[in-house]
Image (tube, rainbow, N blue to C red; front, side):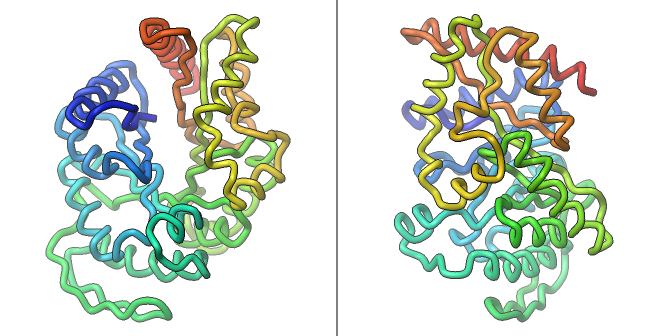
Length: 314
């Protein structure tokens, strides 16, 4: 994951560019860019990163649907995909009530129904260029669009946590992007539902992208790493959507999902996620330390080990 860290806006771009250049040089397959409600725009970040890289896939994880009309999102995504020479994976989702209703002041009554209707318009728009003519319960769209995907179809990933959303993801998307899903949640809850829906819809096997924190540390520091994960990444656990997902697995919080410890411990956790059915493991680096220098050093040590382990899974 490469996203806006704390700091002034003028410095964020340089840090993100530096991180994606490292990720590409280290052989990473994808850089996942979170869409944080209060921070940098993920698709603009994709466009910037695409201009500075040659190979690595760039994915959003994820863009909230309600914040823009599907035609506006399609236009922005196709523009970013062109800037990235066809390397965009568009991750989208209906977000959560505390973002859509409480922050944006928009309805959050039927997110699954909205998502289904939204994806119908989005799929038509992303297959352009041409006229987008879609009428459903939510949208009445008759809009010409003069741009289309570059280098092949633009994959769409849907953040899907519950059974209905997983069915929609299997039927209408190329996979799902997960957060707070441990191995049992993936194997018993996510994979069977989305795979069945994809098969019944005649679609290819879906990608399963699971995000987890990762920290290279001494065994004696594992508890501190998990506590830090809970402190800086635990806000989303207040969402009922995430609480229901946690209930399908063994983890109680984000700290329980962390791959923390020495290289062998991290490798074993990666393997357990792969065995559960995860196709793409999205790494949220979790540095530990008492000051900035220690945090930077911890981040660099962790990412070098992650790159070495990732090569073993190809």
